[in-house]
Image (tube, rainbow, N blue to C red; front, side, top):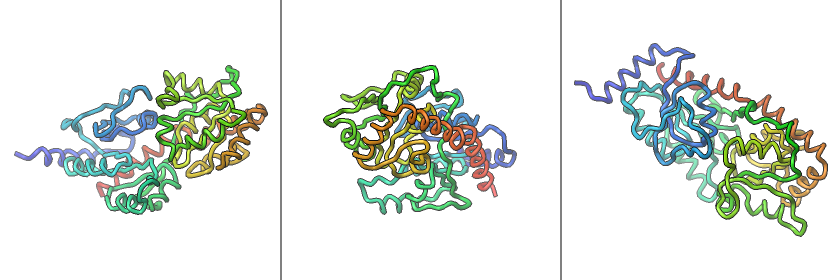
Length: 338
């Protein structure tokens, strides 16, 4: 009698031979960022999230109907693809699963090399693990991992559901600086907690509103709708990230029509053009000057907010995001069966 691994492999080969673009795929994955995965589920495929290290936090979003958490990969499912987010450890697990299911591994990288540790070693370790296809969330992100676009490397930028993240024309905006960060003081090295303090806590403090799971500092919004209302009712969104590929909250705030004041690093210049859809700087003095200017000039803040919304609609809309993912899923599968 054939082993389970052999049976799984044969079933995968048979399924691939009949699979065509537009079919619903069965994708084995790992939990990463809840709102990102909610958007992924909009592709319409079935996602089976293998519990390895992180589980879905329902405080950050509702689990979609086509997303299922599993402690072991169900033998009765004919999987088509393994989608592995970032972690080298997860890729090692994915390689074991690949030997069982005979399906391709697509590694999608959200993070940057951790500058607190040896970056060349991290890059070398990343590239030493071969997968069938690599994708990244930005060109900047791809370059930091010493990769370049080719047949087996892609970039898929974030998608934002601008039908949900609305501008809130019916709400009067408070003249306040909103920031949204989890564990902010503990992530000063990448999220700029000290920089934020240097900007807002001076002899003449600026009005602020902070949301996020940072004990002793702030609490997360009570619901995703409450977070949206916070964006909609705040005149300026202040982002102080120092080493982040792309803060999702920044793009959500833009979709809600917030004027953005942000640091000018990593992928942010790919999203924000200074003076057009936001204001950029890297020093506390210049960032404070930008914040003060917008708080005193609500018409300019409104103009930047409208342009920020337009940027999300045109460049980072959810339809483009799901189309890109669907094209990539079937490309990876097609290349694997050749």
